[in-house]
Length: 78
Image 1 (tube, rainbow, N blue to C red):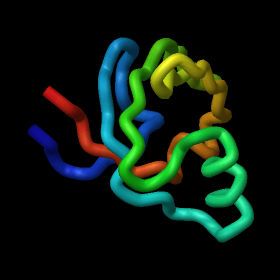
Image 2: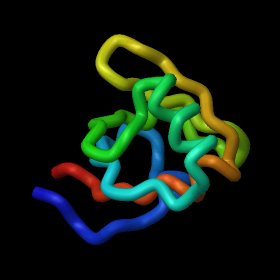
Image 3: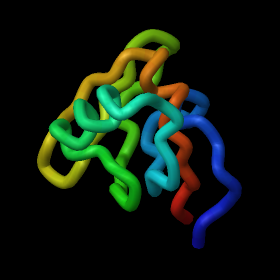
Image 4: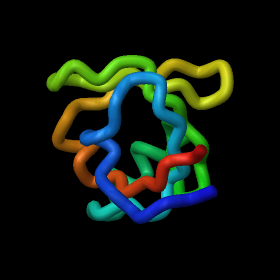
């Protein structure tokens, strides 16, 4: 079940999320798509310690900076 939309950066380790919106310009959206992150993507947060975040998208590991993670709006999956 999907909850309200919140920034990716606030979620804790081991949380699974669904990307609902990306609040950025086209350049950043294209960069994220190249990493496999777009609207409708399912991600698992592997690490979130206040700096960069490490995410899993299927078998791919992705590291994102906090400023980008704050622009990715997600819903948690229970």
